[in-house]
Length: 305
Image 1 (cartoon, rainbow, N blue to C red):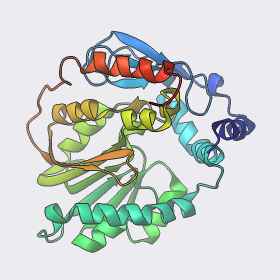
Image 2: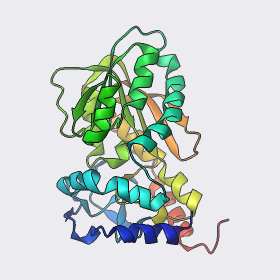
Image 3: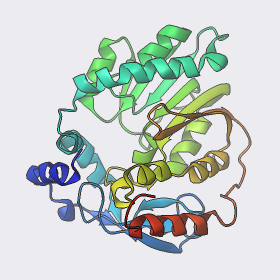
């Protein structure tokens, strides 16, 4: 992909990024700290969007970021056209389904040791789109599935697959006292405004012997792959997780990692988690300084080493 061409296609959309409602980050979503270092002043799309890092724990996030209402409008009207323009191909419910078939197959195989001996149960797929992944897991393991997603068109396709559907986000979702045997958060945690709150909420709705699967873009893998820190940040990702920060966030939510998986794309990292005791974990001392030094090196080195 030629980045300049991708950015030209994005610019033709005419989305007024500066006209959106934005808010500053007052406290780190992982550790609650308030001392930040600004890392970037634009994102991969060429938008004037800044990212910062918490000096206490190393969490990377947009600062400022769009408000919840602005993000709702963005995902309803702009997200699919934006990523389509950037990649130079149509990305819609039909193409998403095609892309998810292989993903669903890989995830089904990954979860064999954790689900193969179960008989029945319930599954919640947060941000589950058209239900391809939920359908595959429900069929393989005899689960009853629910898909939560903010896109009505994609949910209608999930309903056609025989899945229960809920229109909304993890922040708005209220299942009452219901608890789920399997919770999926597939390539979704990067997109939520309150990642720690989302994990804690889902942990509270996980059965005592349940499992939760979550995967994220590995920020470090992204900027090393493209040799660009700016190219690894984007307006649709309020957070850019490293392995250290996402693992600390899982521990603090009371989720114990049972299996870690580097995806075949060498970009995503996934975690199969069981419910456990919340641990006030933070990345090891020294990691923030190492991260900052590496980021500055990537930003300023004349060529990839």
